[in-house]
Image (cartoon, rainbow, N blue to C red; front, side):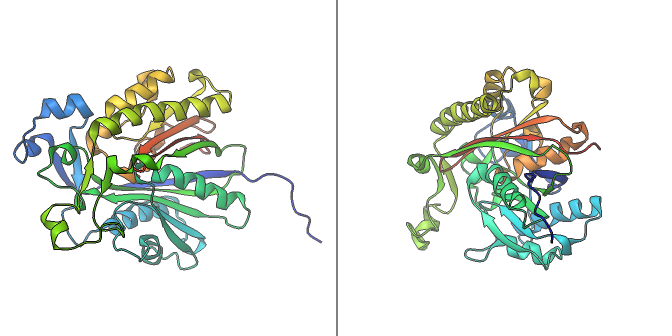
Length: 336
């Protein structure tokens, strides 16, 4: 008779992958499109360029599939062994039909089920918690979590408050049961629905269905109240990070790296100051990609994977529309 182990399962990231399109949209390009300039964009956001998927036949699922396939090929993983595919996104291919289900089929994960997770820029962060819980249940061995967004599909390139910020991209991570004591440790996740009018797409949902006027008014594009979003992001990302550190009895010296959502360099700087972290331990790629929404955190993992060592204490923080925000504490599981 088999006896069930009393050991608590811990979920660990065991592989990462990333993808950004080839087309670069620089600040100089935007100077020709809207009333802005490189100095203004850089000083307020830290962004120099972003990647754009110009091909209309390359939707969010295409970006997600590229990131997933890179991960699978890099680690020589059989897609048939994947149990679940999660896609965090605000730009699904279609309404109703889950992008994750299509991605799972296209990468050959025919034994998996899949669903989408929508929490705006916090989507991947929430997804880390969700994926870990599936692993910790003991019923699932491989959960593929993807953050992917084709933000160019919902951006108005005559609106300088949004078109300077967003880019397209995707990142993927694989969660498996940890074979050591490292992995997903803890999280502090929150939301506040009173902020939903400050960052959204007005049309297309059940509250404001599409009609001829929504396109005339541009209501199918993303809008934001920049000052309100900035103020709340600075406070809540820093608060969440601080709370996770207190919960886990961590000081700034304990954290190997902070992986913050790449929305604005000033928000990132404010968060790192609250944590007493030096700049070399705050990971950024915002200057290259801009804000890729659900993809920012996994793209950081993909870009900086070689910097991590087994046992490194990593702190992830994000803030997004809804409002949604939080922080995740994870210990890195492997050496490169």
